[in-house]
Length: 458
Image (spheres, rainbow, N blue to C red):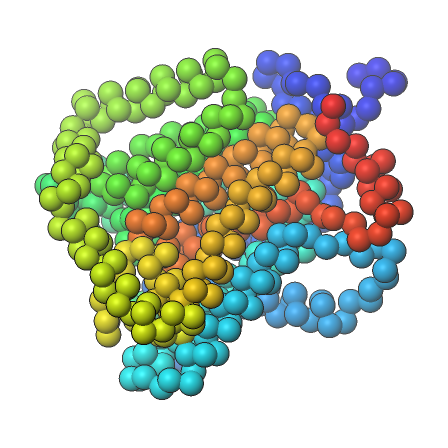
């Protein structure tokens, strides 16, 4: 590097050499966010601290409540100066989403239902607090490339662990999902059993359901590919590549169409960050994985293929299509706010394997608009991150985060996304990371200073 060459040049990296970090480089290590990112996919949702908290006693849920509390306290006690104030659009989107959902919850309180319904309302409201808490905390504490890399690396590590557990369940018949659960924890719900589809065992990893496991594994593929290309050391790049292979190998073991949809959408978005040669290499790797399955376990490929091509006659598909009539009738009765957030527990009504239908029933037009705002915010976050990126590494990460988010968002039309803790937390972690690129100054002088400090890419 010459004396006149800036430390954060936007030049493309040479072969085998990751590009330089964007400014600012460092920042404090986000320990709490990193720990949270690891334990979400590692610890089963059903494993909780003993005591009266029940489902709210899982370590991930407790940390998310802590995050929300810290954000509220920080807002109340932080000293504000107008010349340094910044507004992150991602923060605004999440807060508006929170308020809209809270409005549907408040309206639902005026109509008292059965004890099961009322308990569901309270649990869902607490889940909303947890979801918003982790996103706002990441937006507040993760601001640099190093911090993003730490949280993302921890998340990929946790998902890779879950993939290993799932692969062992499917190919070896060994179920180690509770291996990492600390002594003294209790099971708040009945342990989900491994089921089969088309004669193939549907694995769970550490998740509650095979769909959740497959979507989480599929969403991690572009993230692992990013780290395999742009991690700071050869060892980390190699480990990330292994994590990506584990995720690709784990997706078919769930025998889930939702996982295939998530993987296809995520890769379709992420390929815009790559040139022709890397795309060709990725296709060859995918073909190699399929060939390995054809030799080692053709039953999984056959089961997944049959599940996809016979969708029209599949009972799970016909049940989903029948849901539209029931939801339409409920929408005519409560068009604006629905039954209230959490007011439609499946044990009292019917299962809706579609987060959008859940939004209509529980929140009406307001709930549907809240979910649409959050989904469009995923796309907007990727766009904003690309505009703020000053290096090839940052641009690639923006595409990877956006690809994972959009893949999960699309799959939410095939299963009730927010009913599952692991994939929901993964979604909101990624949401916070993609918006952590962006911060809009509120004064012209400060905007000019930031532009000089972080000039846009040429």
